Length: 172
Image (tube, rainbow, N blue to C red; front, side):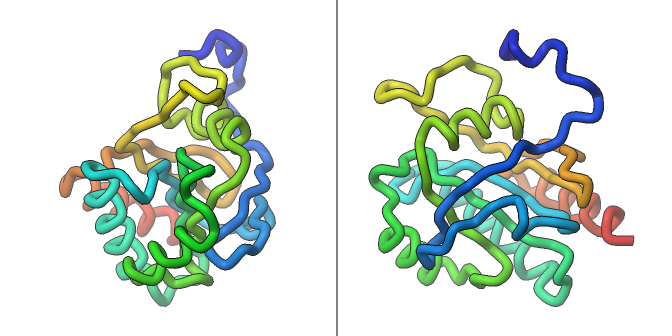
């Protein structure tokens, strides 16, 4: 784990963020205030795990379609390639519902810092620079208090069932 996180308290919360979604809108914590959500880190040109993860995010979207308290957040790890128009096309092809699922881009250092120090999506070090690259299958479940409730393998059916069950518990 990143040494700067060793003194992180048990009450860790997701830090504030500023991202741009598939519609060119600025997305911050405010969109997720009092929401339960699943976050993941992906890139549109990924030939492997991202496709499975996106399909599984769709399954989560479908499972909670009528529940306004449950949302999704995907953060691109290749923000210079994943422009707003690329994300819009991706979101449309995948069937993402704009009010439910923000597929985002933004400043690479900001996204990589969020991945490492806020969402704990990966444990390796990096600076978010040109050579830095994140590739993780993790889905991170965040509760209404902005706290991590679980980290799941977004490519595995068992973990998908587990996260859906855990979201159901949180919504009650």
